[in-house]
Amino acid sequence: MARERRRLLIPPARLAPRFALLPPERHYLTRVLRLAPGQGCDVVDGVGHRWGAVLTAAGELALEQPLETPLETGPAPTPTLELAVALPRQEVELVWRMATELGIDRLQPLLAERCQGRERWPLERWRAIVREACEQSERLWMPELAEPRTAAAWLARPEGEAPEGLASAGRAHGTIAPGELAQGQRAAGVLAVGELAAGELEPLERSPVEGLHLLATSRGEDRPLLQRRLAELFPSGSAMASGDSPAQAECGKAARVRLAIGPEGGWSPAEEALALGRGWVAVSAGPTILRTTTAAVAAAAWLTGWRASLSSSSSPWPSP
Image 1 (cartoon, rainbow, N blue to C red):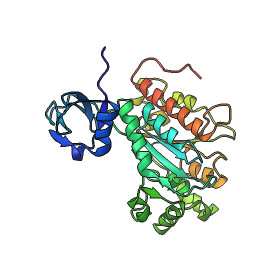
Image 2: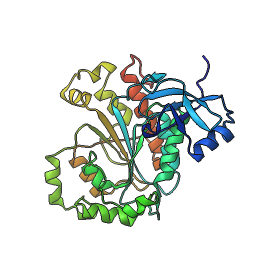
Image 3: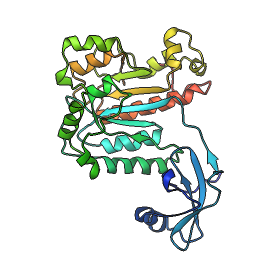
Image 4: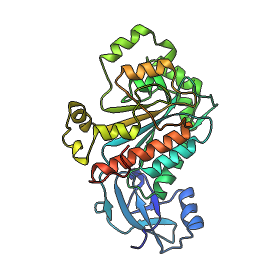
């Protein structure tokens, strides 16, 4: 079967039967791909649609199908897979790229207690990397890369968003500084690790987070392998529709599966206690101690392979 044409991701707000290209897009098509007027590429909107398009003499793209009838339409994969990663000192861009290529739906950068500090987080650059990886891997749905949050805030309330007033100055030029992050989240009343006291964990235990939440830890007992835990919860694809146990039935209804990968030094005791008190399940990414980047990419592969197996009678990996 012939390979599809190279793809260009255009946000829905910019799509039209005929639309202008931004300078980086024009450079990519004419200089990198060396397209001439009359030659084509595919256009995706990142929310499940694909059209054919032709480069015009004016340097625009003209869709080959009406907006209302795209060449291809695909539903969002389910369940949604969210990968949270405590920011490593290096190679985090590799994590965003590979997780996107593998099929993760949402990426959440975390600032954990044991993260090594950095001056700025280049959000716009990170999101450009995600977009390029989405085009390269021919995905119809573009993953979301969220703004960084403190690990304690996200583990306690992963369904929430970063405070609206957080780091407005950083957003203006596409970066957020660690100091701005902590200050903005505390001002909005979000828990910080250093503010947790033993008595504060009890109310959190009575309000567990919803869905399936997995906390990758490098040490400790009773930590099943990630793939073993998923196999226990979903022994076959039919488990998504009807679980064989209350736990399976509950997780089968989950629209989202979240997995949190800790920093190089591991989660702090306070972070781990907070997560477990909120209903997170501790799992292991393997028998060896992995770097954060290695663990994140390996876990992304396991998660997306597991999701693919839900609609298949055969598993993509051997039984653990």
